Every structure is written in C-alpha cells, then in structure tokens.
Image (cartoon, rainbow, N blue to C red; front, side, top):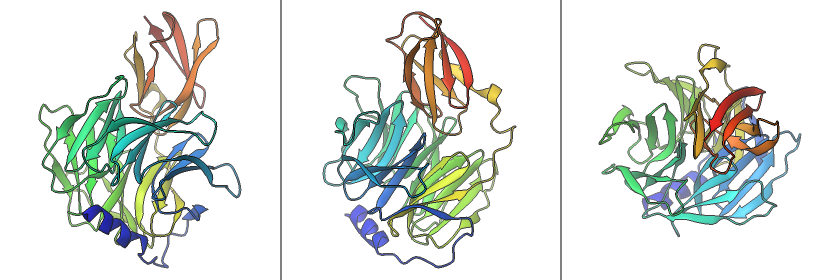
Length: 348
C-alpha cells in the first residue's frame, strides 16, 4: 500500500513558482505521467491513466496521441522497435508493443512479475527491472523469459534504473537514497551513493553526471559519479513532482506527475572526450544472433544494409541495447546510425 499512498500524495503536490529560466513545457494536460522515453522525433509517455501516449517533438503545438492501453504503468524502455512497459499494482507485469504498428496498437505480456515494477532498463539482451524489494532481469531474446533475481533484500522498492557501464544505479523513494550495484559481481551488493533525499524517483546519465529528481521537493539535482565524495548540485527547482527523466540530444526531459505535463531543460553539450565517435564499439563481431553498440549517448535510429546495398533491417537502438540479426544471411553487413555513422559487422 505504500506505493499507492506516495503516488496520491505526489498528484496533489503544489508547484513552486521558482523555475529555471530555460525550462520549457513540451506537452501539458497529460494525466499523471510517470515515465518517458524519446525515440527519434517521438516522445512516449507512460501514464497513470493506464494509457501509453506519444507526441511528435517536431510539431510546434504537439498533439497527444493514444498508443495503447496498459495497466497502471510506471516504466518504459526501448529495444529496437519494441517498447517495454512496466505495469504495476493491479496486475504486475512487463508488457511490450511494436512502435511501428498502426495506432492504436495492442500490447503483449512478456512476463508476470511477483511485485509492482517501478523501473526498466536494458543492458545487452537483458531487461533489468525493479521487482518489489528486489531487482531482477530477463533475457528478452528468450521465447519464454525466466526471471532471475540480481539483488534481494532491499529496504524498499527501487525506481529510475539507469546504467553507467556495468554499474546499475537506482533510486529508493521511501528510504530517500540512491544506490548502485555492479552486475559483473557474482553476488551484487547495493552500495549507497546518496542518502537523505526526498522521494527520489527518476535518474538519468549525462556523461559522468547523474541527474536525479526528488519528487517531494520538486527539484532536480546532479552529482559527478567519478567523485569519491559526490557533491550535490541543484539544477532545477519548482517542479511538479519530477518522477521520470530521460536525456536525448542534450535535452533533459522531465515527467512532472503533480503538474500533469512533460517539460524539458537544455544541458551542456558533452565534450568530444566524453563521447568520441571512434569509441562506438559493436559486439559481438562476427555475430550469430544479435549485435549491440556501446558508446551511444541517446536513442538512435538505425538501418542495416547487406553487401549489395539493400536495406534488410531498421529500428531504434539505445546504448547497450541489442539488435537481433539471426534472420540475416551470412556475410558482411553495414549498420548506419542516425547521423550517418556507419559500422561494419559480419553475420555468420
């Protein structure tokens, strides 16, 4: 019941009038937005009204489009053309839908979860998700995914899952802290990064900086994760319950639950040293079933061509996300990312 009480309180929180000068509204009138993800020019929104919406960010006055009905949903994650949805409280499950399908579309159940799920994030083929007082994962390439617990015994549910390399950061709203685990450890142990926060929910990485929202106080702050003792710097105040964060093209998108809207705030451009193009790594190469690209700082559209120059696959890819290539013919292929970055790989 704690989950429901927190959300009801956030819905009725007041909005401070002190706001960052560069903060702008992307879309208003969205019923209790919980999480967001940007795919190309489209912003997808998980709503507490049991719906998934999207808006076209290129429109001067964006219209809210209904994508699909879903249970009381808290989290979103994109993998290729599949949008994964964390559904909680009434019928806990993870579902997915094809973003290329004609609207409105239907979702399919991926796995029923034991407890409410408040966060999703992909790492290679593995989808990590909060699962009550645990963090679990499934392999999305499995026909029938099996849940594997990664860390158990947390003091409260986790939210805002985000990766930096092999380190998984997550917020714990009730206990007011942000922690991390290393997924390479045989038995991952949660390490506290920050404590004493006011209902932290959303997290987002921008280079070495971790941005986090505190829903109870309506502010967003950041830390540098490379610091031995991180110093918290306030970035934005006066928000209406920031519970979902997503960074795309140096813009921080914010789901404001209490204000029923999504806003955005411009961030400093990452330096060349932080995101060098030559540091994009494709693996495995040669590949049999899937490829992944490390080093992306945002969701990118991709197209795959064979040696004859014929397009054989297309979709969207995020950092550490995967593309299924099992159906491709063996031989040399080229993956072209949005922005005309081309990488060769061999399918065998």
